[in-house]
Each structure stands twice: as C-alpha cells, then as structure tokens.
Amino acid sequence: MFKRLIASCALAALALTSSTAFAQDAAEEAPAKPKVYSPIDFNVQNDLENILLLDLSNGKRVAIRLKPDWAPQAVERIKTLTREGFYDGIIFHRVIEGFMAQTGDPTGTGRGGSELPDLVAEFNPMPHLRGTVSMARASDPNSANSQFFIMFLPRFSLDKNYTNFGRVIAGMDAVDAIHRGEPPADPTYIVQASIAADNKPQKFAAPKAATEESPVTVDMLNAPQADNAAQN
Image 1: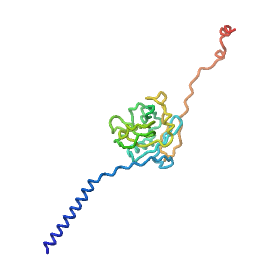
Image 2: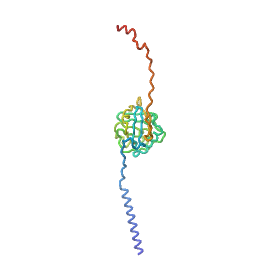
Image 3: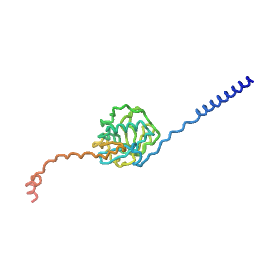
Image 4: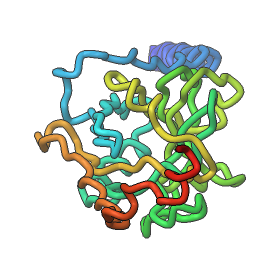
C-alpha cells in the first residue's frame, strides 16, 4: 500500500512538472505583442501637460502635441529644457525648403546643445509626416540632446533613424513662415517656449530699433539751378 502511494505521488509530480514545462515552452514560443502607439490628439484643449507652445519671432504661435508613449525620454528632455527657459531666444539655424526647420542650439551653429547628457535613441516606426517633430542628432544614434526639427513635407527615410516625439497640431502656417537658410540671413527665432499647462500668455518679439536716416534738407528738395536752366 505504501509503495502504491509513493508511486501515485511520483506520477502526480511528474505530470505537474510536465504541465509546467509545457506552459513555459508555450509562453516562450508565443510571439511578443507589438507595441501600440497612440494616435495624435489634435484638440488643443486636451492634455495640456503634453502640448509644447512655441511663440516665434514672426508673430505666430505653434502648438506641438508631445507623445511620451512614443519617446518618453525625449519628451521629458524637451519639457525640462522648456521650463528652464532654455529655448527662449534660440534661432532656427538650419531651414531647408521642402524638408525641415531645425532649432534648439544656443550657439546657432548646429554643433551646440544643453549641459544635460545626450539621450539614448528612442527610434520608433511613427512616420515623419508634414508637421512631425523629431530629435536632431549627429552620426551617433545616441547623440540627441536639445536640438529638434519640424518637417515641412514627409520624408519617410527618416523613420526608425530619428526619434519622432510629436506633431504640430496648430500653427503650421507659422512653421511655413520660418526663414530659410543654413543659417538664414535673417533667422526666425523662438521668442518663448512653454508648456500649455503652465498657461503662459503668448510673447511677441520686441520691435526692431529704427535705423537712423540722413536728415532731409531744403537743398535736397530743390532741383539744381543748372538743371532748371537746361530744361528751359
């Protein structure tokens, strides 16, 4: 009787072990579920904590929907620098017609960044469409820091090669009006960057100082006597 009990226990243990092993094998063989990327919310009244506002020197305001589920580190960096006032006064230093407008370098040369460490790449499959906002970087995939660019037109060759972290949801006309050049002769700049949740009013560029003009004298207004004589 005792031997039969031991044998029964052994068979039960073997069955349990086999069942557990089968379950583990099935779990290992099951394909991982693909990551789901949420769509862009174009309503400027929703989720104000994830809307970046750029007040540009052309007098217009741009609203950008930030997507932390696409690129959490990049979004956190943009929000941190924005709230520090880092982007205020920075120019769009590289603006290529039909391609994109790039900013975020305090030196205005394209070689500068913030004092924070570079970011690990967060490449994702979200397409680079008109209005896409993505992190700029050097040849090293993990070199994004503070610079970003806004697309004028789609460029799908950038997909999975640059960290796409948002999209313009209002004010694309302001982006279209950014002056072109590398750098532009008269660069458009960010007067103020802010997060919508902070409720900062739009800030405008200070008017340009009037240039001094040579005074107009009475002699300048009168035609020379010799010319008058020649006409008579």
